[in-house]
Amino acid sequence: MSSSEFPQVRTAAGAVRGRREGGLEVFRGIPFAQPPVGAARFAAPRPVDRWDGVREAFAFGPPPPQEPMGPEAELPAGLPAGDDWLTVNVWTPETDPAARRPVMVWIYGGAYKFGSADDPAYDGSVLSRDGDLIVVTLNYRVGIEGFALIDGAPANRGLLDQVAALEWVRENISAFGGDPDQVTVFGESAGAGSIAALMAMPRARGLFRRAVAQSVPGTFFSAALAGDIAEALAGGLGLRPTVADLSGVDPRKLPEAGAALTAGMRGYVDRWGPVALTPTPFSPVVDGDVLPTAPWQALASGAARDVELIAGHNRDEYRLFLMLGGLLGRVDESLASMALGLFGPAPDGEQTYRAAFPDASVEYLFELVQSDWLFRMPSLHLAEAQVTGGGRAHVYELTWSAPANGGVLGACHGLDVPLTFGVYGGLGAMLTGPVPSPETEALSARFRSAWTNFATTGDPGWPAYDAERRLVQLLDAEPAVTRYPEEAARRIWEHHVFAPLPLTAA
Image 1 (cartoon, rainbow, N blue to C red):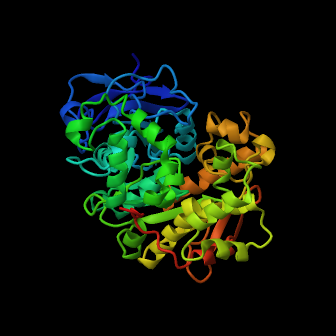
Image 2: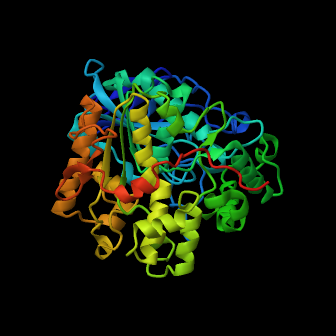
Image 3: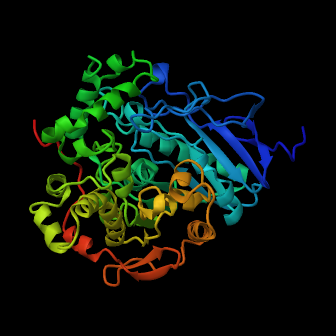
């Protein structure tokens, strides 16, 4: 085999062989930790065992066990089998240790309950080629395996997996041509929430220099809430939320308990509050150890002042969920009133929203308050907390409407993912259409240029955010820098604190 066609790299655990693809050298399925099964089930990730010889790195590792993406969906056929869930993938222009290129590490979203790096939407080739840098993607445990609060196990195992992958990057990326001192983490939705958590975690300190948080969810659980949810998850199987009980359940069967609870979460509104009306019973837990405090409080106190940050959101975040839930055109007054009362900031969220948006339809109010509570205001507040803590943050809003479906979804949740990667399969095809228009391609190129310039220099091409000017980048067919455009919503949430969500009834 030609070494130019099948490049080899020696990692700390052993040698790997990749492939030359489209002018890049690509390595897939490299383990960064032991399979978290058997005695390692529900444990923190453990260092990978060394191997002799050369390990082929041609195929993605198997995805972590997870429930399907939606009640009627099925997991894709032909997924890689095995227990090596914890793997990384690398796209690099050249495996020259002297090159010291910037590194971008992607953390996928998926409501903390599904997702994997083998998703074609996360192909790093366009970003790597266009930005002349290294792209790394990784798998981490999701659902009960990664985020349920289990007695006898560390909290936030999915976050600890991400830390282990970043430690692998620090130790090995120079052999792939990367600079371990120029690492940028980037992620969307639960991936952005993970990044917010990593910025607050002592264990992750020093592992990355920059961060891009796209649509940060505001749902972080208190230990009391997470413990109660874990009781319900295990109770559905007739078990307790302990390592001893849950270790006896096949990890590929355990996600069924999460899916069953998700289907009945509305019955827990009195105990879990607004979380019961979200699509997931999983989130990072502020446990006082792995995650000592919520990200907004940690950043405001300066915990990540040395990390340069981009944080932003899409204008119409929640509209995607309206469509997926079959609610487009079906929201009535009672549904809107319930959402405004439950998701609006206390004490008078409903009246405040109605006064601020007097001409809004009930459907728009229903959508808007959930966009704000779940993604828009947490993202803005994260940037503001970073500035308060002495760090630097750049803010953006995606205002370009998804062209598919007649534009009805607007600038909805997830639209930024195909624009970030320049890849238009899966969700991207549903939002942009399978064949991107010239306008789509131009906006995607603008996204990629901003993100890769930021990873290389710390400057995405627009001014840093501050409390006086509030300048943000609007990402649209015609981009503009302007004052933060969602001023009415910003004022409604100005004094709200995104603290760990409590257990509302004992």
